Amino acid sequence: MRTSSDSGGPIAIRCDGIGKRYRIGLRPRYRTLRETISGMVRAPLRAMARRGHKPANDERDLWALRDLSLEVRRGEVLGVIGRNASGKSTLLKILSRITKPTEGQAEIHGRVGSLLEVGAGFHPELTGRENIFLNGAVLGMIRREIERKFDEIVEFAECGRLLDTPIKHYSSGMYVRLAFAVAAHLETEILLVDEVLAVGDAAFQKKCLGKIGDAASQGRTVLFVSHNMLAVDSLCTRAICLHEGRVVLEGLPAAVTSRYSQNWLPAFKEVVHDDIESAPGNDMIRLHRARVRPLDGSPTDQLTVRTSLAVEFECWKLAAHSRLDLAAEIFNEHGVSVFATAENRESPAPAGLLRSSFIVPADLMNNGTYRLHFMVFLNGVGATVVADWEDLLVFEIHDAASELRGAFHGQWPGALRPNLLWQTELLEPLPVSVAGLRGNG
Image 1 (tube, helix red, strand yellow):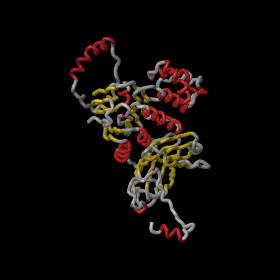
Image 2 (cartoon, one colour):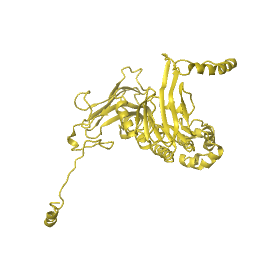
Image 3 (cartoon, rainbow, N blue to C red):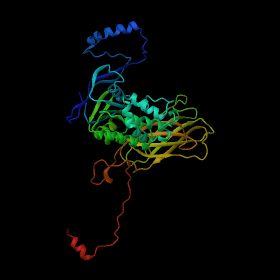
Image 4 (cartoon, rainbow, N blue to C red):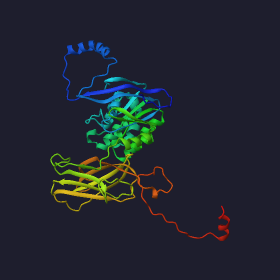
């Protein structure tokens, strides 16, 4: 079934039965000139023989996409979400003509600009100025267009001071800002964006969103791949969810992201690694166990907004004399950081198997799906990161009995849901004459 908007505008992108197959464990051999020419002659005959025939499955086959049909209309902003390896990036690579589909076909009506791999085409020995022209050419901009956009690109990237410095001396943040600035200033009818918000600081990410929003407001067609559910909800006019290479959800962004969070994100309140040799980590620290459990009651009890939570980490500390500090950040289903917390030791903990924990009080967090990001720092939070585990735990907090809600039964807004004590006191009574006039109102 082909998914499509009901807007009725002209088609910008059409996919018919797209499939992309990779062969696991096979390395292509080099071909002679004679074999290449022979293959070119035989290719049309093989294509005719395969027409209407689906490729047979093989245990070595890995299908990144399978039988995907899709229509995107001009001026539409389509959000594409899904778990890792669901086919999102493969879809954009096919639409960008970076890779060919194994089956099906894709039609593109309009000039395409791609933000797939930020920084592709940069040369470390060239200056920022030289790389702007080089990367602009790689992305399809003519020199006159680059010159016209040059000042805007430099201002967006905030790299004027380092413009004539080789970019091998740039910080990673500066490098990413410059790469995004070049790609984002392409004048295209169709913009393909693949998770550019995964890099850069919060201010840069906000700037990226603003630029993508500008493209949408100008009537350009945008395909926006992201794990940031809040960005998808706010930027997109429609959304689809991919799972194992197929479209499993389609509709309004808020409805799709909500169902995705509830039905497709795995929930695991505990992870355990019993073997110290194979446990994730390094020669300084290795992870044994992490879990979220009710502070009181059984570990299998359901977590609700009324539950106090214990968040525990058990790690093998291998570096005896190093000071290692743990930190955790909790994100909700929209990718919004709910809170962060960290320990700050005055002296190194002893080597061995250690347990660290913190308590999240009841009546604080809203119902929904949460992801935990766990980090280990050497010599204080904000210093060197020695271990970093994103989405280490994914857990669900459910709604509780409605005694705190009164007559309200809808979704409670906000990242947090504290049960705060309200008090009302009489400061001054109304005069009798006024009270009498208002009494029957």
